[in-house]
Amino acid sequence: MPEKLSPDQILDDIIFDLQNTALECRWTISMERLAELMQLGKEDFYRKIYNFKTSKPDRETRLGFTEIDGDYFCEFLQYCLNISGIQDRFATAGIYFDERVLYEIRENFKHIIQESLARHDLDKDTLLLLATASQEYDDAVDAYISEKFEIDFFLDRCIFEFMSFRRIHPETGADVFLRDYLKALIPTKILNIKDITKEFRDRSYYELFGEFRKDKSKKQKRKPHYSRELFELITYFNLEDGFTKEDLKKKFKELLKKYHPDINKRGLEKTKEIIENYNKLIIMINESKMSRV
Image (cartoon, rainbow, N blue to C red; front, top):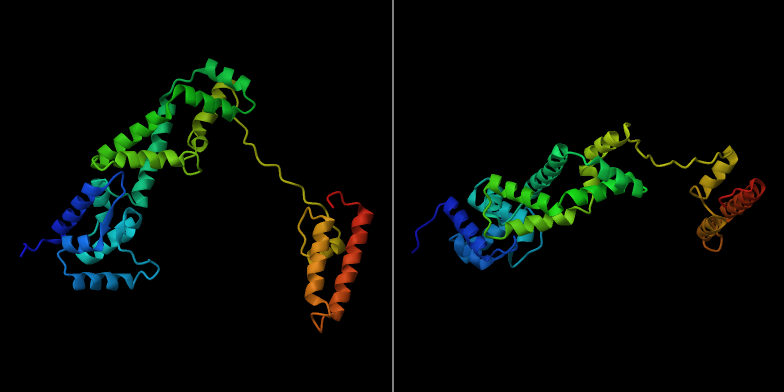
């Protein structure tokens, strides 16, 4: 009979098993293998699974756990082994990174870019040439940053520093996973380069032209002025600004269909009211020659 292991030793064995099969933070562990590593009989193991899942009714039953279930798997191990900090141990092992850790690397990536630009000696001649050739100053800065810096340099430096600081094991391909993760976020709002480099863009503009950049605020459409009666009729038919006669006809037909006496025995008076208000609104539209309708 094998020696009974402590919870910490069991967790180490599970992590080691995942490290041996993980590829770029992708892995699978079957229920049978997990029960074996936890030194539990089939009945005892599935009893723990059942008891745990009663508090997680929204989770579907699986034949095992994968990296997609990372948080759920860590919670299950904490429930069974009564050990805290499992997410951090998974991260150090290079097999799974929870949102807290991923947030940390995102912020580190932003800091590295901003720090590099803060130390950068601005090549005014090049940036001015690019600004002259571009309609938008941001386009000129984008071209300037692409020429002076390699995005891959920022990615590699960020991942190297992050993995070194957290002492993450590289054997599982965690560096490839993290690189792909960051690269996929660059075109999105989460790691938008324009937002990350805003301070550099404002500073470089001031150094070039001696004045602060003006924020381009969206021009707000002026709301048309309605008379009280016209406003009430527009509201009656639930129309929005910019409505057309076709929109009005559609709303008119929808109300008729709802209240017509053929459908609604008590809808005769309401139908008369709908037709009367429709005719009023059509007349007012024609008289005022509302450009948008």
